[in-house]
Length: 358
Image (cartoon, rainbow, N blue to C red; front, top):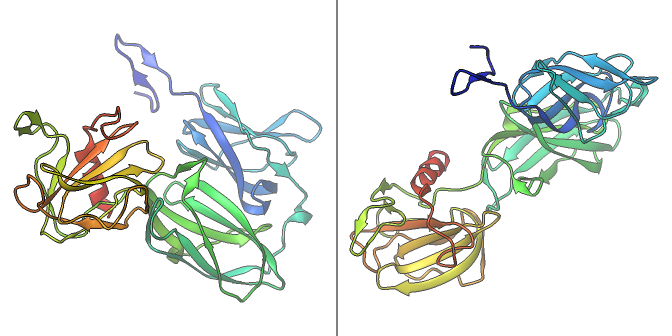
């Protein structure tokens, strides 16, 4: 079977999805994030890009000029700006004659606008090495560089293994031989970026970007809620008196700390004869509510209070109708817990995923 094609029911062949382009950025020999010159390397990002065979640039005098990709993957294509290219929105074409055009303009400038380069990155490191969306600590890069004068420094956030530039910005008038810091909020187009490994890449606004292994970090949307040894008990659908289980039980020693799997605002804080002391948090940018039951004692948080991902919310207990010290956790779809939503059957799968990286 040819790569990228699938046989449909009845023996037919389903062609690959047509490509989509979301951005084009310069990554080497640059005059800026969207400014390049002849010989610059640019990255086209989007979806279904693995079969791209040509990157078409506007040509001087009209028309287009083609360049073969240096590399092509599902979400990223790398190409060099060819001789004779001009400012415009590059277009990509795949092996099946499907095309797409960048929504962003790539400015092609003369080589004289590229910084010749006394800039040298001396050090760059990321802290913390594992961060969470809306967490207690945002990803932060600390860096130092040498140069002959104050510099407009460009900072990229790059998905490791993929090479995709997920965010980029410029810090103005940065003094050389001085320690600088910059933070990143983990948001792209209004949403948290995907779970995975990332790195900060540093360089002059006009010039080549550099990085170090110390500038790498992990970023995740959720954190496992138990800070200690634990085991999995009954999940969704387990029989209960008069009903079935609507969440996942997680057993741990009493007093083991609990943290918010996703930050947001406290929707409910109360006591129930079955649930014991419980807390409901409206997960930020999810539409979902996260419910924590059988806490050892009432949480120190209050209704309406803002909570960060990974923030302490209580302790494992066995309040209410509980056999042994454990957390009963539920996840509810929008509009929320007993407000028209329903319990999410995939919570066990979610917890085990969060458990792997927390």
